[in-house]
Image 1 (cartoon, one colour):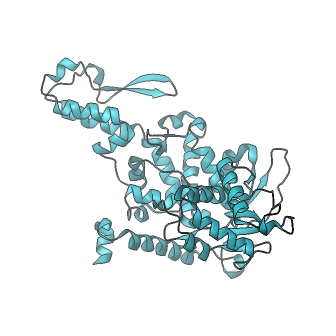
Image 2: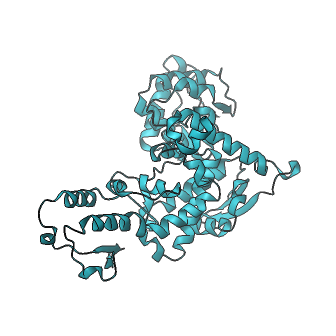
Length: 414
């Protein structure tokens, strides 16, 4: 019975159970393809490529555009800095996370021309991206990257518009989805539907105006549409065609390109387990504004000389417990680049949260009022790592941590 509901009416099953099904599907797929196994254990050879910081999106696209489902396997990324030097570093999943985050940050930036956003800040492909050189290829690549992040449980702070999610699920957006895309147009069409007067007096015709990076053009909804007046007898047909053009016709090519890339890693049937709001939770973490410090502590790793029994670590968890919900979210964003915890708790954070010791000198009396460590904490978001100096007092730790998260002082990407 439950299997039938998952296929026909997934919303009848609690979200937590559908989340478990999604993760089980991913785990089964990894096992079947041996995607997470090294070659010595029968897994595929990793995809190795080099990315220049100054051309990250183009280099990433060139490296992965023909990868297809093999992108499910291990990626080994090397970065070349702005000076042309190969960056030193070991990749234990951190550089891949940095690569995915930076690709999304660049590709979803409205200035690049591939994506735009609704008035609520929900992202969807820029219809005019088709006019950008390699625009559709880059959108397909971005879909692949988002799919890889979902597949690996890497959080991305890029909420998607519901009408766009519908396309990714293989569904066709309907009239009511227009409210999220263009609320003013939606209200106008609703008012036209309810209009009691003669629709011909409104001087409308079966055409719409398009805007491609400032260049305006007229698109007809039916052959010769600019000469076909909207009347009471055909206004419902006009409303349907106008909404469909904005949601599907205008967005079709760019949305389809992104969906093709995503489907290389995450089949649309998996996404159909969720509604658009839940898909955004999968992508960017839970909506609960409360960061569970107890769960956070239970799944945190330590390095550089720290352990759960270290005096500074005890101070850290004491300070975290004293912070407000907004401050805890700010700590999460500072360390992981996403303010929310993963769905199901910190056990699903990839890479796991790590507190790394930064040894610093301090007065012998620092614990009782002497001069404490002056250095600020820093973060390596690619490893979900907080580099925490060994403060001696909770008051100093809290002061320095709040300063760092409010100003991004001491921020390190890698």
